[in-house]
Length: 335
Length: 299
Image (cartoon, rainbow over all chains, first blue to last red; front, side, top):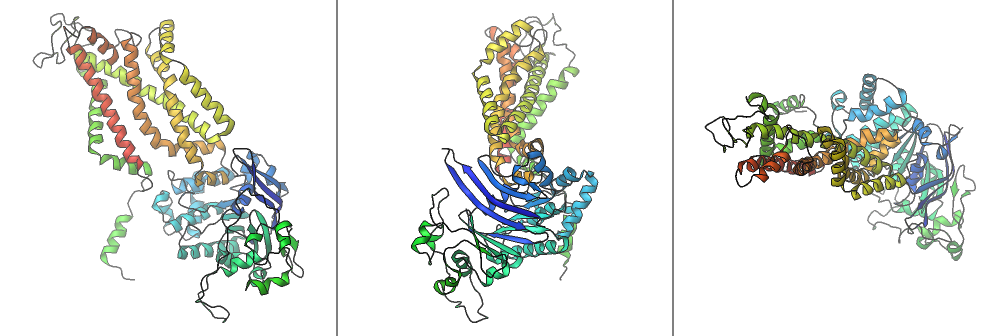
């Protein structure tokens, strides 16, 4: 049975002038126990808002619709009190920027033990001991001493490891990581990815990983959901998606990855970097057809007027795409 | 790995190093500010003199020395600041009055700080309709002329020390609430607040454990502006004859007395007025130094 089942999730913001903006529309996915789901998309594609909605962290003018079933309960309709029993306990979260996601005025110990004291009712001393162990698990050297330090005495990579350790203290079933590596430099990124993989393997924590970095997804995810302008454009197993992307946008994202080697002889490593021309639609812009159509090399007239719905990809297990053009045409045109 | 003596030495040094909180760092920064530090020292001397001084001086502030009436300040006798027309020693009276003024200032600031922080942080964090209602209440309070209320309270309920503090505090938390609310609004959008919410911390928990500690800097700085304001307000009330009652005295009362005898006995005005000014200047300098020290972001 699925651990988390999201059906037709929508997030609507109301602007000051009362006009609505749909940040997320009709997003559905399931997360199985111990699996990793990568949500990919560019800035403003609604990937962060999707998980914020799940945890009830939308700003005051945001409203979530649809259903998000966790342990038989709809997260979207829970009261603040009920939600507080789940978040931080069964569902942990790691934020993008470890420089700002730790409270600068509290020692690391105070911030780490908060969740344990809150959800487990353990004593401060016991919580502290567990926190030290958690820090050791994320390779913080000299954890027993460092735990009494303030966040500003840690480096960026260490802070992110602290936030991950904090989120894992209560041994949650789901860890949501919102661009956990974006604010870090490349070598530290690799460490964090490795750490997440290890935790996923050793503790069986299911992970929802939000990122705009295809490389990060490739290294970690079992399933991938690609979002564009608040909608899912493609959802498939990671391997299938990388080997055979069936949506022009996914294809464009993969082609935009810089290549540094040409081991299989198919890439011209001296060629200029590829981009996807144009910009995503502005939030709140009325779109009649496919949101990606204006930037799509494959777009036909119909794409501008008819909105594609998410449909199962023929011959692909658990593969879904939202595109009016047949899968077979993907290969030839974009290359 | 090459373990040179210097690296072992530095790790050995690092081991006992204490962890420093952001406030502690700001305090160290503050200590480097000469003017602020000097002000703090002078302020300390004045405070100690006002609270401890009268214990060591033989004169009771209300005692009359009939052998020395209306004598100007002199270092020769025992009346360094001179005496008034009833032969009361002005130094003792200035110190005793200072104690009352400072007590009013500190107590008033404490009360207004507590109310202001609680009000502002709650209003700013919860936001929306709650915020609107709470801030409109503050606006309404602003519209009430506090002097009128003070005069009413004093005339109806008598001129008692606690009433003075109460009346002043009841109106001086408004600015604090506004400042705190503004700061809370910007804190609320910081990621660590989202992180706290994602941890399942309740709203009161977030306000108390995550918002309030981050407000300390602003609150401390603003409190140093509030102290002189309240001391001054008390002086104004006393000057109008609405402050503390004889034989209790305060700087405001003394200045009021002195002003009436300005031509014959100018020292009666000068001594308490100078003390008041020096104190207010010092508090302001300290506040300035604190603001500078807390200003530098994220060291």
